[in-house]
Length: 511
RNA sequence: CGGGGCGUAGCUCAGCCUGGUAGAGCGCCACGUUUGGGACGUGGAAGCCGCAGGUUCAAAUCCUGUCGCCCCGACCA
Image 1 (cartoon, rainbow, N blue to C red):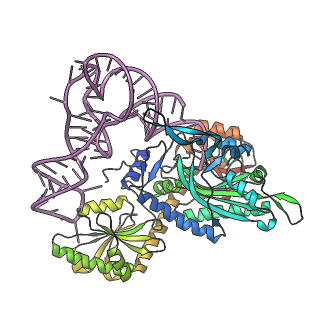
Image 2 (spheres, rainbow, N blue to C red; image 1 turned 30 degrees about the vertical axis):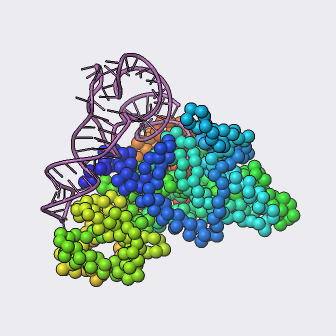
């Protein structure tokens, strides 16, 4: 048992924080609510970026960058938007610092119009699109940006909700409502596929209720995931903004019929919150467990030796194994590479930047086992004199802690890839099974209350209604996570009002 | 922003009530013995006791303010 990690049963919140700390994913910053994403945490974000970015490009999008600061007046141009975000904006009111005469500094020039630090970029992007779009021939505009945003949240949690966070926000403008809707759903599918295929997190696609939708959107779609404590986590959103922002920012074009029309826009985003989801969906009481596709290191090799002779023998064996897995060129390149603290790194796959590490640190083997285990590395391989003599090695699988003795000659890239893919599939399957087992129904309000208290998702019929939702949240802590797509045709008797014709919804306590 | 807990070495914490030389375990460094799942011994480095005021001959300790963290709410990706 890990001595630096509380168990999930003991204290789930503490477990989450302990896992992050043990795996060195993030640290608290000196500024309230902000975090430092450490290299091992940032590598996860880079992996997410690489895969998602390709999916965006594959669907025709391009990247650009818009500024961090937004004129305060922009926010006010869309009524719902300002209402949704005003409360959580950080504002820049001054520029320059000057000496305050007491050995310190004070802000000097007050700005004529304050800037807000972007909480999201619909407004500034809308402003620019208005200038770029003149004709229907300029449409669609399909731009994404990777950036940071800031929301002055009252209560923060590493990765799940920090004041500043990293995300991507896609912003598109279209000629017709139908095209915008198609785009909104296309990107929701991109997110859902990504979550399942890459992060091994099963998600429910659905639509948000009026009270949960994005401020300024006509309709918001989302993917919802279940964490191991049964709580829901919104893992991504895609908004059809209708003509709301186009009207607020004058995104107009001359249409095919020679009349001026407003564009139809969408926006969609996922954030570093996904790293929180990754941790809470898969990790265990021993620490981080990473789905192989996300893992920066796919295998850690732990040499075992006593004497210099043994060390040389083991090193030669490991070199052969690395050459077989990563290639001779990479073995040579890896030897020349600077290595931090005795851990040498060899790229197993240059495209995904995933590597195999050899832990030559001057620690005991047991320490190294725990080290890589807590960091979620999918496979660990011990190589000692006994293994060199027998030609077999023991490969340990992080996902289920199983061990396998493998003939060294079978350690080929193909073999490792097959093993990695097998774990990827098993992890998705396990998470899906957990979610399904923790999804219940309810035919009455009492049953809804009882099942929500059990944790997990509750699928039931319900007429979305701002007041009823607020009341239910008050009484059960649960909110409508979405109206799931996979149940849209069915209607039934509302658990709250008793009225017929209610759509199916998912209730859950959410992060 | 409301309620609760807490800021003392890199980490976890004791000391505070009753003011008077700054402590432990883990980690870190050196050396030795070790090394197939978190080793042991010896020696060592390491702290403006969160920050700012106040009371006092004297403050980690008492008082005021402030900042931050964790948990529970409200808000939210």
